[in-house]
Image (cartoon, rainbow, N blue to C red; front, side, top):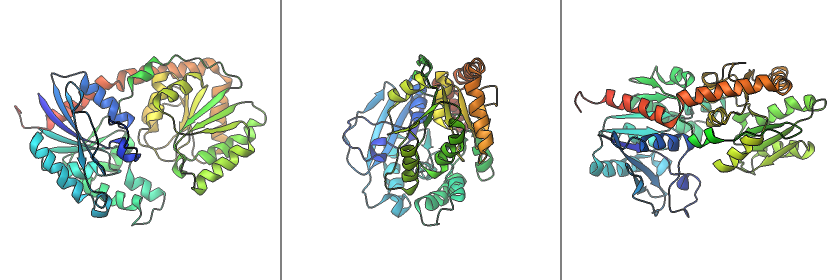
Length: 383
């Protein structure tokens, strides 16, 4: 049996919500863990997460999945380039003695900690921090700027990189010792969504954090003239930093246009309910790796319209599994939205094809097996 140490972020730490007694993770990581949980005879997983507090946590998350919460003082973390995190995790690993260490994400400490773990290791890139820092013109010593530098170090020093999309592979492969293309798994509960898109007028759903790179304001401004002759509503669900000028601009737009409503970030149950009743999902981001919200919409059978950027074309083939439109082009945006609204039979055919693709390539068990194949290829013969 392979013994794996999986380094990831406990969202209790990420959200500074330390009250829950059980850890919770990003949807992609949780779906991968669900896949591993279905193969207890093949892999033993030790999930390791650093936290700024001593957290009450269960010893096991599943029969073959253990959990370790490691306290790292608040004064450390990014201020020390995660050196304190690396040392704390190495101490934990000396007791676990894994065959392999897998770091999830370059946004925080996990990738760098895996790269310097002292064990055979690989990392997964979720958000391409170097690319995000470049397109946002992030100052060198900002969080984004430092994260981009640390991502560069982690890619060069780790044993290999799992890339979720061809876009990410193109960015990472030139620097990595080896790179593999394996997409995210999707929460299997989204396959059970019972679609009932009967609302009138039609509902365009947007699920995204209210950040400039999500390009939401440009999308809303682009479809506003179209809305004058075509009735629809926009339901925007996302995490927002209320003191952000960009968030205030989106709120001002919503205040002036009654057909646009903003809701705070929702749990997965509410997202599933929103997808069940929506007419289509729109994602106007100008940079994405492999967005989970599109995968969830595909699994739920919700038609998708998105910008043709990053890893999105890996998921959506134009007019086959959804509609793609061009960034910065209002005519392209309105054309894609109008086509989906005007052709209900075609949009449902696209959604059915997308759901089939998600079931074949993004189910937790399929993605977990793909990871196990990579892990075994990295170990000495007979290990």
